[in-house]
Length: 429
Ligand SMILES: [Zn+2]
Image 1 (cartoon, rainbow, N blue to C red):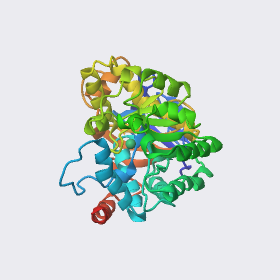
Image 2: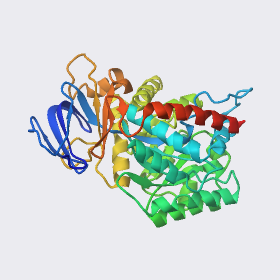
Image 3: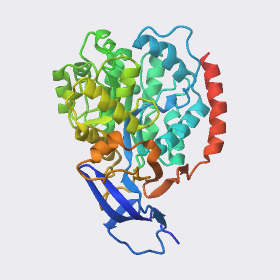
Image 4: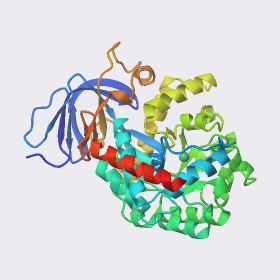
């Protein structure tokens, strides 16, 4: 009989990411934590075995900023006329999509986005959610879907004034139930859409709620040049003025910030999430990564959950812009999300060591030169990809086995997602 959260993983080559290292070992999990790592661990009756002989094993990745509400957007109706700029794109595309969401489409988006995360080796999602026609209960709905798939999550609702004061208040209230009941698999931040869609009063309320709850904010900051232009004030200075520049916050993008604003946000113990593919897709400009400090993590901004692809795009774009970040610095940005999420969830994430949470990913090896501490970062840039993800363990439970989800039926979800997506798109028009 197996004990809950117990698992014995055999024969893997462990890829330590922070700091880089390579080690051949067996790994024993009990109660959702790694309790032993050694060259050989004998079989135990109460611990099922996962054979990873000849395979690679890395800590689960953390996506520092995503939007699960866009999980059904691929192929949605396009506009007759392309958006003229970023603000036009938000109004004509993304704000039509989020308003079309209902209970069912939010639920299915969570399942689809959660499964995409597992298949990319992502074990924790930091989500920024909006569904203005279904606000109350939306976070609980996402939470249920992600629990069902087996992904850890840090949730929030994007509070904004773009739908009027009642929707702004409903957005604030949407956090309350989950805030009151934190678990090791789910935490909550206070969501705020973006500087230019929030009045002073609403942004101050977001900061007050977050401070009272002892959590940070999750907000788009200086994604495009509009963010400061439309308010006439530096976004970080504004957050500070309104009492909303809080430790443990995620400030997404930070493409258009002056060096002193970046210094100010890091000094306040807020984090930056960097989404190079989204920045390129929206043509908002190149983030000043050369000024980004270690409290910077990678996100996908809703372009799936593939952080390998995000890492690679960021590396190439950074090289093109002569950012000065080498492979090791990029690997550090990939793995720092675990430090952020672990502190919010109250579990040690991102390390393969005794006492750490048993969140890890078994990868099919990509044959090639010997993998070493020195070339590990290069392997993440030039050799590995999400296609290598084979098994995923979260909190000591196998949630993806031999590329298939364990807790949900992928074929049934595919049929459900097709129907739900078409209904969602119909509501958009
Ligand atoms: Zn975003």
